[in-house]
Amino acid sequence: MEELVVLVNHEDQVLGLMEKQQAHINGLLHRAFSVFIFNEKGEMLLQKRAKKKYHSPGKWTNAVCSHPRNGETYLEGANRRLYEELGIKAELLEKFHFIYKANVGDGLWEHELDHVFTGVYNLDFNLNADEVEEIRFISLEDLEAEIAQHPEQFTEWFKIILEEYKHNL
Image (cartoon, rainbow, N blue to C red; front, side, top):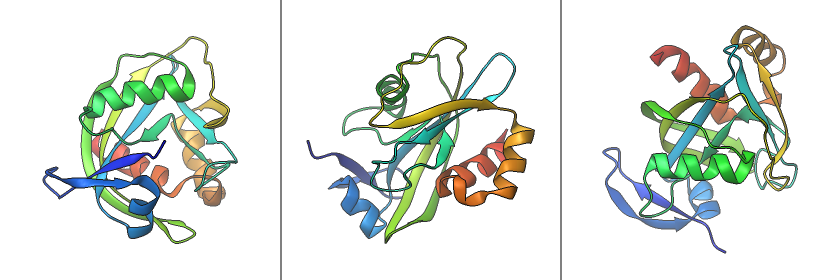
């Protein structure tokens, strides 16, 4: 099934739909969401992207990043992808949104109007192997140290979104 993203302007007004990979090749602004999940200790959940992903395979990133479908709210999309990728349901709260553009390699760009959500989860996961290779929780202090030592092991958008998260919260 062809996956479409919703193209928008800077005011989140819909301009049309485009196949996801083509939007990433063209670097066109589209809707997206990012989810940060924390455990009861305040540690952040990271997922390692599956090696078969068409961009940024095998890199660490936040719990979920994806795109709402046409007619789907940002929150509905975030909940859908939490379940599809990690096999979980969690109460999510929207914290902020912003626009960024990042070169993710191989001629691909993430140019997103990104709505950022947070949630808390402490139970079991049911990982989708097509999406996620592994997961782990990490303290923000240890995460910052890891990113400083090995930035190439993390997705470009995660590094940007994490800085926005720290700035906004």
